[in-house]
Length: 540
Image (tube, rainbow, N blue to C red; front, side):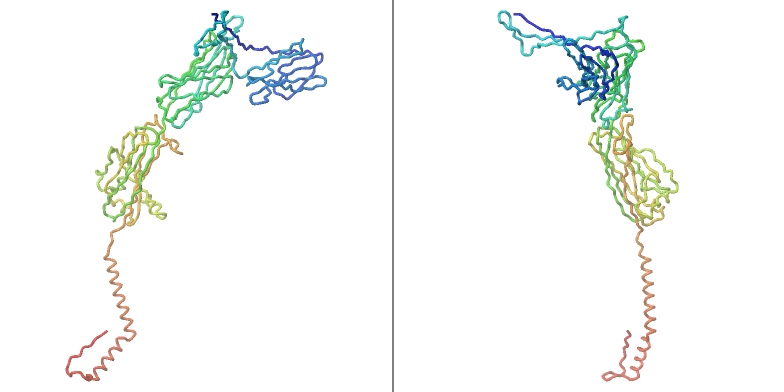
């Protein structure tokens, strides 16, 4: 049984460029097509002129014109391009056969890389005895072996390139996990020496990033990448540079984009490396083939604060129990942080709370008191009295505050509530000179965290954590005093009686009644009346 195989050699060669028109007298032909005149082939009766840069479709470029010099005229030659002619430029190379009056116009691939390969294909052909080899279905019947281009290194047979690789993190000074979707790495490679063959740049990046795309800025670049599969090894991006020849005094640049998931767990700092290599046997001593750069990593955090405005009403000079509470919810990721609560405790010389020693917040430690810089606080409090009595702020801007620090750890989407409960005094209100008024008693809550590792994210916050207010509306009024209304009412009643009596006197009420009584006494007792019986007079 014979095993027959065939070998196919596929090769793409560079074409030589030349002009082969030799007129007796100069003739001028012009056309607006891009690159017109790049190749010219003179035939018996006309000229073929190429315009390889003329873009006539999205993936089609290059036209060939049939021109005559007398009269001077050029017409586009229409033909059907083969299906594989994508990103190719027709007319970069043209070859004429004078005997057959035929011209071969070859499309060259100006964007994709050139490559050589040797392909072996195994066929199960029949032998002289009609026996055929039987291969397993999964057996590989084709092998491909890439072949390198011949490297022309001149008379000294040495190709010494001088590669310089560099990169930067485009528009980024740090990685913001939860905000940034991409980390862009801008890579530049420069060849300052002789031609460099099969040049490439290999980038490595940490686990937790994922390769997304590459964007060419200058040159011919092709990139392939493999992300970390086990979470320990680093990802690898392999990019070819102007394959097969990265010419002398040439520079390329491109951007490699890596995706950042919102829940990625990275180190405090991550690094990316770039290593330039080539097929040249020797590099110049001044070559810069390796770069390693670090970038800081920060994680976004966000909290939701909830509190309910409480209201207390009471008589001035009395004590009143109040309660303030705040609920903190962790929105993004598990976090160790400190909640700092500032509670006003003293205004001027008066305590706001009855017993400061009883002012405690469970699971929090008392810190140092913070003094206000405002000494004349009454004008500050009463500044907006005309607008509304509810505009009197009573917080740490005018009062001494007691600081409580609550060190805590909260998982993602978990919450915790803190409560401030004590008896409120009213002596501090008397300093304002108002007996009936309303005030905001305002405590504040803020966050402290490792800002080297985290940043606070909220809409329009500029990454600054908020200061949340816990407000209680305090309304006071004086104790009712009934003596004054009674005295005023009594005096008013007596005045009314005096006025009424004077009016009756002026009307003659008392005089007419006196005359009637005297007439009754002169007439004597009436019939049926016992003489000597006592007489009873009734006055109205």
